[in-house]
Image 1 (cartoon, rainbow over the protein chains, first blue to last red):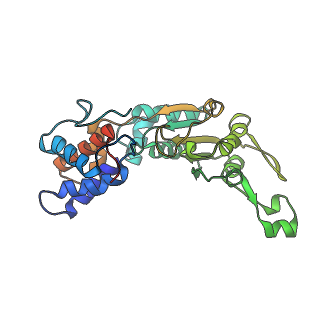
Image 2 (image 1 turned 90 degrees about the vertical axis):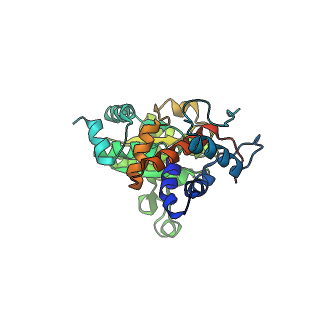
Length: 72
Length: 218
């Protein structure tokens, strides 16, 4: 919840089409869980999720999550 | 207006009707309550809102792995010990003893981040309503003493297992993630944002991350 609240609070401070992307990067960066078997980085993961959830309008609750790999 | 609706209105809580009702029941019958759920689902908000609704004073502790037994029960002030000796006069009550003496609610945030030795101090306090303090003696809990604790699931960073003995003394209340609609209402209320598209996208992004949790930290 805090991450979503922070994203909405930060978004107006960024200009242009990337405002939400920038706000999400700032808000979510401190809230990503460590994962030993990860092979991606934060920016790439955010780009993938952003494309799925915002650009394509996919619902993260509808399936296992856009691009998500279930935690072992 | 039902008690749950009243708490929701007074504390700006969206949803959580079942959890609020359960927490109210547990506290009303004098039991101890353990709320468990992921980060940011409102465990502390629910706990403190229910205590406030019942008019219960709370003594708060935030758990960490360096918390000590004496920090929880109380400690002796060395200059006062030299002057007056060991006894009540030189003893400063910690949150556990303070809550027991006052008949308050001891609210422990992140109980499973505390060392096991500290958790063990709670066993007699929860069960027999007493705690032994060296040089002070037995401290008995006044009427109304209860413990409300929160914890993250054990797979979260810096958390540990509670002993079975300690879990057995609590009533357990799970707080899962809320629905997307509830989260959108919470975010809109918390930020004052009137742009529903922005709120929906932010909530979806956050839920997607919470669901995936797939990348290394930046």
